[in-house]
Amino acid sequence: MSGHLNDSLHPLDLHKLLIVEDDEALAGYLADSMKTEGYRVFCSRSRDEALAIRPQPLLALVDLGLPPAENFISEGLFLIDALLAREPRCKIIVVTGQDEESAAFEAVRRGAFDFLCKPSAMPDIKAAIRRASLFLHHEEHLSETGEARLHFTVRLADGPKESADAVEEQIVRGTLADTHGNVTEAARRLGLVRENLYYYLKKYGIQLNRT
Image 1: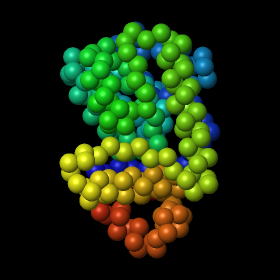
Image 2: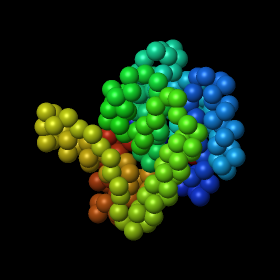
Image 3: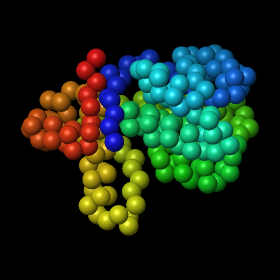
């Protein structure tokens, strides 16, 4: 798995919201509603359109049923994977009208922050986005004190080694994200020399965004 690390977390990043919804009328309604709440909104109708938006907003409202497979949740799940691979701090709220229980389980397993069923009342959507923004804000403060909140999912049947690798990768990615790709500072926080950190970058296919 490879991904790019975004630039530093600016206070305005807490109010940038990605809405991924193929129903144009609903997307417009959601966008207008969240703009009145002070959010800068970016809309897309598909996985490809969402991933083309750079830099990636750290808050996302994602419909799981996206083209070209609107009647399934696969496109939304693939998008969750891609967004989190690129930016582990991203808080994703998924929305779907399909088989809610199995969709919720799989979305959370992939790392979604919250789950809403269609149709969802606007006050519920706004509350979910505010919670996600609050978590993002407090996680940034944790990083300043040398702490990190991790979310990971592993298959126990894969064994301790694979599980440990999954945790190790997330710690490295999270620390690099918190230090905005500063290898020297990330190595210091991890108790490593720079050369050892570069080993982990290569091991997990982590690419630093130097733009």
